[in-house]
Length: 271
Image (cartoon, rainbow, N blue to C red; front, side):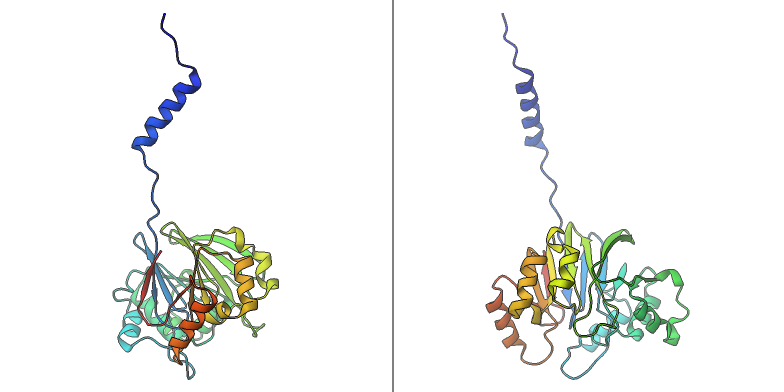
């Protein structure tokens, strides 16, 4: 008489057979291209996002990309063509200037700007930008401690209410961008206090890459906030400026050995 296998064993055998032929899908990853200060481009899966990337020369000591890079950004030429979303954390001149933003939007009809109302007002006050369709300028001023998740141009973006360090009257927005199966955090010039970050609970947000100003990484108190309330898999320090970048790289490496420092314009990181 033939013995029948228990039903549970039959199901287990079927599951094993399926797993042998079906491999888990790999996450493609995202490429980060550094520009200067806190300007970056994220790209993956044919999608591109610029964050704090369209600015001009600001005060002494702040970095700026080469003229050829600035021209490519303004003209939406490769590798900055076909950008889908432009994000701006706040209106300060080392992060934003209306002239290159308006030029890029005119050259690239597919791009949408998402930022605070202060930045939108500054852009609208610039004459060449007044003809831009209202639907391409999305105002999202965020109250401190709040989060808002949206899909813009088929890209998931989470907006974060983070106050600007030392400038309470400046509207300031952080972002989590989901691209290439990764979650990339950009906090701008946020106030690195427990009061600012604890309500957001980014420690539960599964941050793959956190783009952070270098001074937060080298400062012991700020670093405790990073380790407790963000807990990213990878830290990238930037906003180094033009003065002694080598020393800053060493300080970042000593404070957080696993961190990467962006110093040179157009250097890239794949994650």
